[in-house]
Length: 112
Image (cartoon, rainbow, N blue to C red; front, side, top):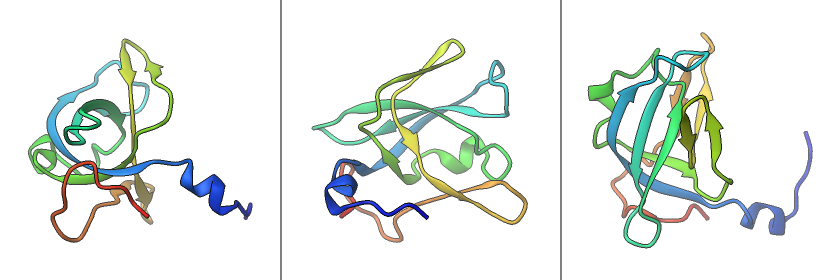
């Protein structure tokens, strides 16, 4: 394990957002969705490629609140520009389980 400082942690903007659109991403090397997430008025809508197709259908994801890193630089993934990183955990089957707030919270709220 690598230790970080508090200053290192505060550089990472983990924000809550609501998934508003999900599309298939057939060009991805690993099964993935193209996702649009609403992070509220200050941050707006950001796109992400998410390898979460094993445990979540597109319908499961619409209106779901998630936690994402919003201050990574954009990353080109095939024909798609990913603007944030949706967070989650690998389960025993190596599938991603989303990190989500356990109560509804305002889009854009910062994890502290």
